[in-house]
Length: 91
Image 1 (tube, rainbow, N blue to C red):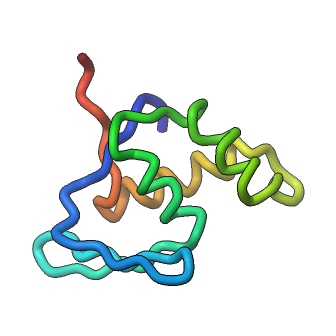
Image 2 (tube, one colour):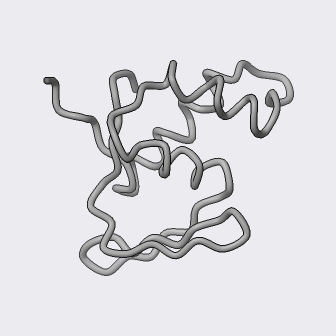
């Protein structure tokens, strides 16, 4: 998925030890890994995969056996699928 992403409509969030629990409408709880939590927090304003990939790689290192852009894209796709992130409107 390409484009820019922003946080979805989380009703509440609880962070602990780098992970997060999100309460998403209507009544779903989603647990985020440390990488997904960092991506979610980075999307307080619109952010692209190209913005996220170097930040993730700097903090967590390169993924084994694949490109960082591919790994970040997969995580972003998962966050969009559960409603934690959404495509930012074109401005």
